[in-house]
Amino acid sequence: MTSGGGIQTDYELFLNALLHGDRRSAVTVARKYAGSHNMIKFFYDNIVKSSLYRVGELWEYNSITVAAEHLATSISESIMNDLYENVISDERLPYKVVLGCVENEQHQVGVKMVADIFEMHGWDTFFLGAGIPISELIDYASGVNPDVIALSLTIYSHLTGLEKMIVAIHQYWPHIPIIVGGQAFLHGGQEVVEKYHQVSLLRSFEEIEQYITKFSDHE
Ligand code: B12
Image (cartoon, rainbow, N blue to C red; front, side, top):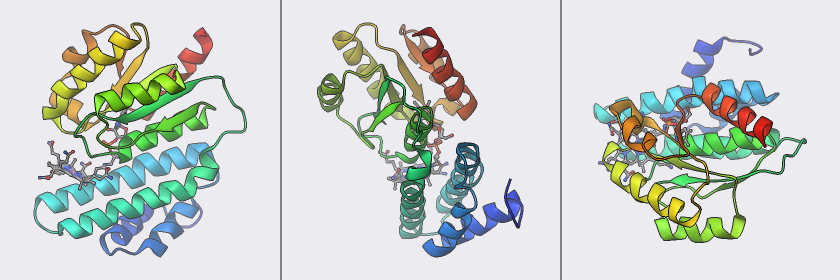
């Protein structure tokens, strides 16, 4: 997958760079994976995500400070922004997706990755980021008229907020497909979201890509 050094080494190098606030070294690792969509996805899933999960554990055990955790996240997001030009697909499809986090939900890196997967498949993506109030989401989306809305949930106690959002979106667009995902669903919640029609919980990049391909085939 990479030239020089395996995945484990790259994970360690990247994690170390994040923990030391060493943006240059993090960029050096990222550059190795910039060559194709598959490599970027691999880098996101196996290096960036895994490193941030480890950062979360270290923060939980008080082994690193809040400031160090913030810096690690900010470096990761800046690297994703750098990779964006390699994420854009030349082949465009006539589909649009609006993505964001549920109200009060501040964890936005995961759904930013999801936005990039859609972008790789030629969709127009509108990534609204963290903590979107319901009325703002609906107001913005009504200007875009998306084919799909994607909502992210990390903190399980925000599940009620997600339900409210689903209901409000469907009051406005009764048939619009909504995809949901994020770490909150490691703690349950599937039955809550799937009682609403046109709502799909997706758990991996593979499931997201299958969803996108199926969507394009059916339209
Ligand atoms: C960075 C971070 C923050 C940052 C977020 C900044 C930002 N710009 O995003 C800040 C500082 C804001 C933060 C705050 C908090 N955090 Co925090 N945070 C993290 C950390 C370290 C990394 C998050 C991350 O980016 N992960 C990497 C991404 C790529 O992974 P992901 O989100 O899981 O996304 C993947 C999938 O889930 C999926 N996915 C995600 N969204 C979607 C959406 C769709 C539609 C689909 C299909 C898929 C999908 O795709 C992604 C790729 O596979 C995590 C550790 C961890 N385990 O993640 C803790 C963590 C999530 N935080 C935690 C906590 C407790 C908090 C706070 C409550 C702390 C506090 N006391 O204030 C607050 C809550 C804030 C809020 N209201 O939301 C806990 C949650 C524990 C729990 N069981 O709920 C964690 C796990 C840390 C820990 N080990 O304890 N945090």
